[in-house]
Picture 1 (cartoon, rainbow, N blue to C red):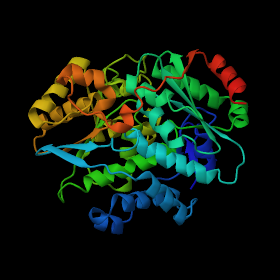
Picture 2: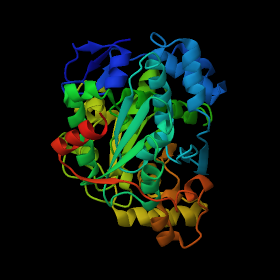
Picture 3: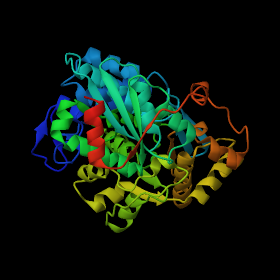
Length: 434
């Protein structure tokens, strides 16, 4: 399959170029030249398939022309080494738990798949692969885990100073080895801008063999579509869910749209955001107005210029009407989010993290208008990653910290402070990564 830039559909590249170079030189994003659909046969038997079998069918639809079946099987099996269970809180009110991976966040699915696919694509390349990733919290930890001590790779993580939780920061800064953390004096949008600036410097990108692990990389999105299909099959036959997606950079929602294009029967999506409501505002007005992000307790969603919006536009042919027929928007502030954390615990004896709480609020709002709907809210991270907020709302000892997270607490933070200056960052890359 060939891939094209959202800015220049006539400019086509192969899979290796799209995945390893990550960003087209015109600053667009890569999309498949055609969007596959799963066969009618698949949709006749999908409810009886395992998570791994679903993953292999989807991965094959996108990559089978370029990656042998045996290699794809190994990539999928290595990715889906943990489940994504669907939890029912009340009739029609479902939560999809995406935090059972090694770093307790949904980003584990995409990071593990991408690391394995890149390893296959570079199997005959003796050069070191330099992976750049900007994070608002969970992406960096998932990528660090997926690539830690992987031969032939090194990872540079950029995160915004003071804007990630304490345990999230330890996931970014405590592993060492081939993982380097840069503490950027700015926002996630600044971190993302620095990464893009490095890729748009083609000489730098080529000399350092740069690739990205952000959701600008298509290899992150395809595996995230697996769990949309996996979750829907866990509902009774005939139920078409509304997926409620806590959203920041909108990679997760874009993955859901890919699943929909594959044929997944659902009644739409809700883009649930905190005060960084650029996309919900667009869905209301038709005007897309990126702006500086504001800090909230759902920090992984603190994005003011979501990269994947251009992919969303491409999927709908640039039509605002078509997008808002399938996607609805909702946004909530921190006070409402805190109240939702308390309500979910009181009503359902379930502990939900600040991002899932935003989604739950949107799902509740939707069901109040459409009481027969079934909503699936994506719970994107384990609540222990936001311990300060959880204890403020639910009290001390409100939850047990998983051992793989607790063991990081006493490790030293190792990070290089840096201003959000693209030229400074590129100079650092040339000096430190040469």
